[in-house]
Image 1 (cartoon, rainbow, N blue to C red):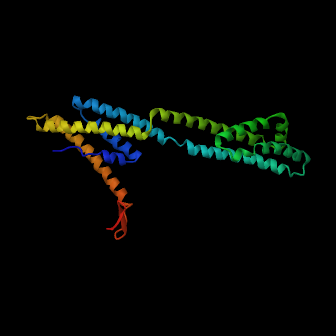
Image 2: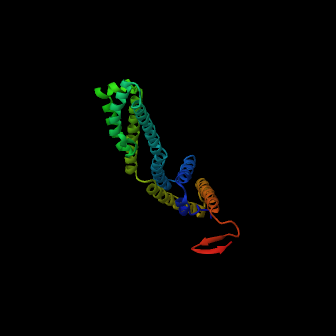
Length: 264
């Protein structure tokens, strides 16, 4: 008699994207079919509700490009800061007395903030903010105008503001992740709900097949769902088999099984 193949071991081996696709495809296909027998509806609703939570956590994890973007923004503001520093350094060698004096004045300030390139990114934010405030004070602002640095200072301020905004967004998202729980934890809950749903389908199908006469519509619906589940189970079994085969030794090479070498 048909039944849904045991799948929990398989589900726990799937990558996050595969796990998401596995349940998204099955639930989506079931939702297109006729209404389930009343006793199965609460179990499907439980699975759907938990999967919606996995959906939210999974999609948020896919949106976490903030860390990579933060490094990119940090690099841009370091570049903007280095441009200012190099212009100031060059001015200290200028033959023009006014430029030379402006370079010396600003070099003292730049040396005060030399750690910007070496401290953690969050600490660099505070240092850059303080340096920009100093650069805009009358004593340094005059020297900055002499060396035409204002556009570069504005650029540094913009890059620093962009970094701080994205850092705040990432911090908020990480806190939301904690509140929603880990993807691993919700995956286990989805697997458990799916197993409960599957066990009930197998039982209902067996009962209706043994009844005389059985309800042909219910039998047909459950038959379709069993076929659907098994199709995706077999699909991912094949994917995992191919993936495992890539790590197997070539024919004639020694392989390791439970710590012992053998020849295939």
